[in-house]
Image (cartoon, rainbow, N blue to C red; front, side, top):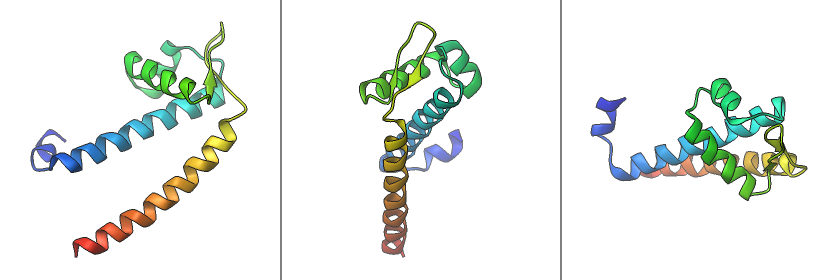
Length: 106
């Protein structure tokens, strides 16, 4: 991937990094939903992400009110289903936007 990144523009790299971040947040959220309460170390093991990245995702998800801490580890809140539904709709909109952008490139 290193070789590929050299030929990419900064706007391409930004888009890629944002998608990777979103993907990580979703992985963490779904893992908490399925296995919570769960701690950082276990989340790191299950997702294959470093602990500092898990910590950042947990902080982001907690700030948005989607998860909450407990003495046993992270738990989802009652906002999880609404959030996942909104995210799915947003991704559908992204798909349309991406298709429109691809048409503009031709």
